[in-house]
Image (cartoon, rainbow, N blue to C red; front, side):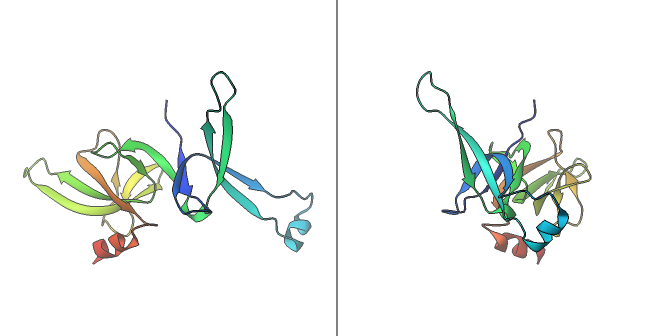
Length: 155
């Protein structure tokens, strides 16, 4: 079964947390006009399960995150076993079958056309990533903590 996880940066301390995504509005109105007059603040959370004590029910902890940092887990890991997340910056080691040489390029993980790709502004092409890919991927950062990696790769 596919593992559906999200991560985001905690509002309190800026650290990455992973778990299950949940969005909640502070209130609900019946009419569209009420929303236009008084917009409702929304809160974005990552939910995590925590053990309380032996034999007792576990707790669900909600950690508020910065919504612009929300990333989904691709379901894949890089060559070192690290989880690959949306908006990660990866080093692509492409094995050319015809010339037996490896070419290195850098790309950003994006979701488009119903699947995960390495691409965006960094790569000239989109490379679909899956377990049968003919290249290896190594995470070198992400667009939030290491935006300079994207700028260097675009030069």
